[in-house]
Image 1 (cartoon, rainbow, N blue to C red):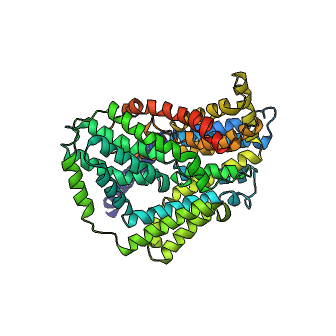
Image 2: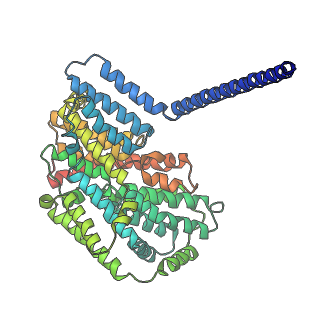
Length: 507
């Protein structure tokens, strides 16, 4: 009697097991399909986001695998491969630039270009210390609002006429960028410019005024950042490269050689911008007064702010008078350490405000420059460049300086100014040495040419910062910057190198 009852139960149980198995199988298949879909999605996203990195790696690999060109060693070929990888990454920002700097070091070890003990040494020299110390000192000045006090003083002197306000902004940005940094200066002045536009009726009512003020900030930074070694990391990079040729340049020498460019360009930039973007209003009394009230409401300088200003001026004096003996980097680091000892700034603040990625980036750039020189790659590239220049009738002297400066200036508008000097600096210095033309003059003119990022947003951080509020179009940079680009080239080639430096006895 029990069997007929049990069999249906067993059959039902088997059916449930079979159905459960089918459900589990379907669920497993769904999971596998989901994983495959996610995998395909991940791969598609990876290739989309990292296409330029993969291209850079492919180009580097192709150069390394190709037959070694005549006159170039195998190690030199590997060095050229790395340089091609770095150029593409710098140009496209395929991965974060500090990561590129780390790859520079690891590549040298993996490819046998240098030992793991020697590579770290190339990542640190006085130029890197100078960049690090200057960034920390700049952060200290910003913390104590010294920049705002200076801006207020300039507005007080400038008056309320548009032309004079633009001249005041350009002047402040030029001299500030020469001693702090371009991006910090642009960040400081951006709210001032935006405030003037807002208090004048807003960007819809005064669009040309908005463009005028934004480009006065950006181009003021451009023409000032080349005036002193502390105006940009590209300057410190070139100083580091010149050390390889036993050429030492003091802070005072750089100022004497390059500051005339900034002084001449300040009124010209003001004149040209006011012609290209003729403002809708001529008087800014209301806007300037409101900004003065806002900035003055912070009250007088505190005792700590005064100490910070004195410390900065002391560091500046030491840069000018003692850098040949103490080193620019050593002075900058001592100044930053003293600021912490005096309680003017703490380490946590410096950690947050200092752009450590910039320090690492330029350390890697200097390491790559040393690698290009030690492997003979810089020499080989220089010989080929010189052969091409000679075929065009450019062999040495001022024509060669004009060619190298123009190449640098064009390149810097397609990639950042610092990386431009990092890539071209060692090669062009080698070109100068082979052509028996002053590496000193070629080196400084290369650094100056790398500052002429007038044409594109990506050329310099200052351009990108003032683009942020949406007052400008990409075409505005070309519209205003093309003439400034050409005038700057002519001024450096014929005014500085062809005239002023000859008076100074540079070459």
